Length: 419
Ligand SMILES: *Cc1c(COP(=O)(O)O)cnc(C)c1O
Image (cartoon, rainbow, N blue to C red; front, top):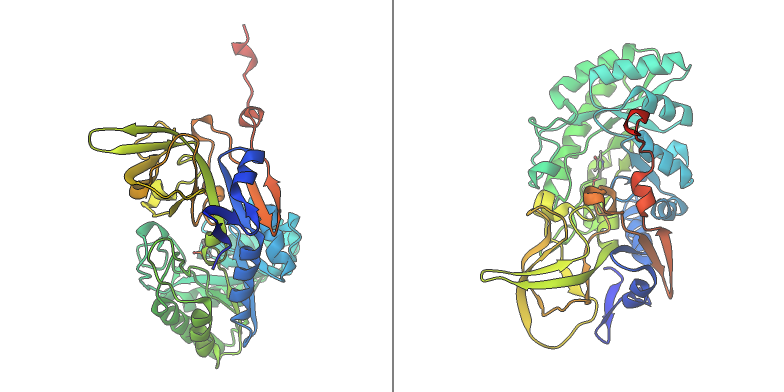
């Protein structure tokens, strides 16, 4: 459940009429519900209360400082994939000992930064990375705690761009190769093996792929123990899906109870890295209708938000629900909802049945709280839109709208061109 609901035909976020926010901040803007974010985190996290666990929110899903702070205040950790995300996370006040660092291409500076900060562990993607981490750790006089990210060859049945656990994917170490690599890791003086990690993909709507993955990981943990390689943490990554349209993903409680069952006999702390399932339905993108164009074949509704603001429809052909901010009784139409960007791929919805709209009407693009703002760009020199948090009767701008000045910050024209 989320907190975007109609009262007398007008869409509210918690107790704030969304129209009121639009009047104040202009359009487009991202809007998150404090209550939904808190509630989703609590429901997910408490579902694992039966076992030792740590919920590390995946920063790439939504990296706003305020959003991270909400989870930090609830005792959460974070999963990061870059030095920039570590910087954000530390600025949100996260305890470094609750930070896990994933990602296929960690640079030397990023490794140093994370080692200095004293993070919980690095999820290592290759033996070369292991060697590099060992060298960096030696140079700065630290020991790096690591898990190897294994690739379990499980098909998560999701979009190919967000599927990561197959042999053909770039992620992780083949699970059959892992034992060998753990033996190598054990020889490295500045490496401390603490875990096994995996992450099979995103927007997964079945339990079976997770359970099969955990079984394979468990088998590996037991094999490692026979070689006196002690594993403290099993990190199962993120990936639990949400309802964008008609998907029926398992509830976090079902997900948790299936995983808890598998964790009984191995005495490890379970780490989870949820992103989408917590933030996805806690946010929307609010945009205004600019123009209507009735072609012979199609009707286009041009709005002031575009693919640079929300790229999921363009990138993955993803479905995002469209809802009017003010519901009207009356006719419906079938239309494409498109943005102002000079690309045919710039759309937010295709052939959607929606109420008849007119210029000036506001619409909500639903389920935009994860991989929304974080994937936005300045393409077509469009300043990035503000992010707003609603809490009960109040709302707070938690990232201001970018200005034209922001667009050219850091750019300079070399002297030889200044004639
Ligand atoms: C993207 C990602 C996540 C989060 O995935 P969701 O589908 O948003 O839960 C977790 N872990 C890793 C390593 C990731 O790359």
